[in-house]
Length: 313
Image (cartoon, helix red, strand yellow):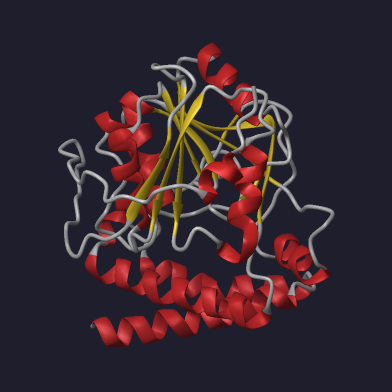
């Protein structure tokens, strides 16, 4: 039976969560913030715990739409844990999962869209049938209803969208916006890295692989995770990403992992000097492809990286 999450949200009480998470390998207890909203499952032992970190429980209206899509899932025996206001996404997810009872945990970004009502049941089935999979993501596709600007960004900017896979594929494109994991294994590997401000996805994928688990993208799992809808929002995001990347390269280079734009094997760590040298070549290739929007984004990213590097050094 479907549950009216929008109505539950309208009458929800936000409360301070329990910060106990002794299993976390890299904790950050500086200025903890945030409140938690919990919706219990239909059973005492749910298969799935859905985790949604959010800054404001709004995200320009996407959050409420996401709540509505949860009511359309054909599998309703899941608990929902929303963590609001924690500036460190990794810490927020850890805090939420410390409360989770599910065999599997599924992270969903507050601005993600789940157009398929069978998303949860399909992902659970895949995890049940393939014990070697520790973490599985879906396929981020361009929705028909997106604006022309958003569609162009998703097509030109790597990792913003890709052609859906037709079979289970080992991939570094399994990402937080729609990501199912084995809860016990998540805790076993130490959970999210709360220290780093950027690079949560690459770090988590790697520790799962080091634990001997596969990291994959599943067929028939579609979601939409859109970029900012305006030039100012997009370029501001790219600038912040560059700034945070510089911070990570200076303060935690051991956690800086390559982020490929394709499925399959990749070089785990590429030296900074090599990444800097290949930068103009990649820009040139993008120009030849006519991806001028991506070139502009890369310039903003580089400017943010330079500013961050000079300040942190």
